[in-house]
Image 1 (cartoon, rainbow, N blue to C red):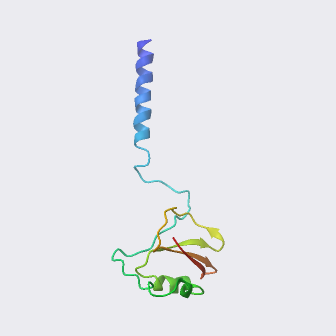
Image 2: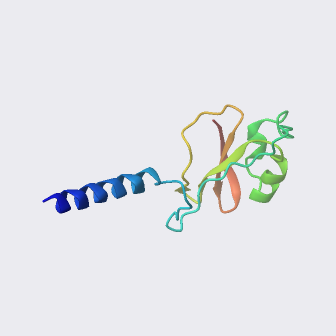
Image 3: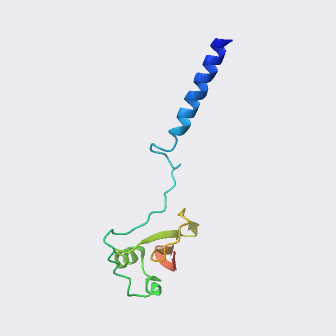
Amino acid sequence: MTRLATMLTMAAIAGMAGCSMAGTGPTKNGGETPMANHAQPDGTCQAAAASDDALIGKTEHEATALLNGCLWRISERDGKVLPGTMDYRQERRNLGLQNGKVIWVRRG
């Protein structure tokens, strides 16, 4: 009986140790592309003076160039909503793209 109790105790300890290591190593995301925040650490947003509506109709490449130094991300591409965080950042621009062009811009 003590041998069984010892084995069960060891299995429980090993299980708890495995759980405490969860999330510390690299993970695979099943092939999905995570939403990326794009920004430069110096905080010099070139588009800060322009209206967000100025990005609408621009190609993805043009919008990327205009948003150099700004905090931004692509939230939707061709009708597919991309994963993102739920934190609200007033300075961050969320872009919706359709056929390679910006169709909407939202803050947060």
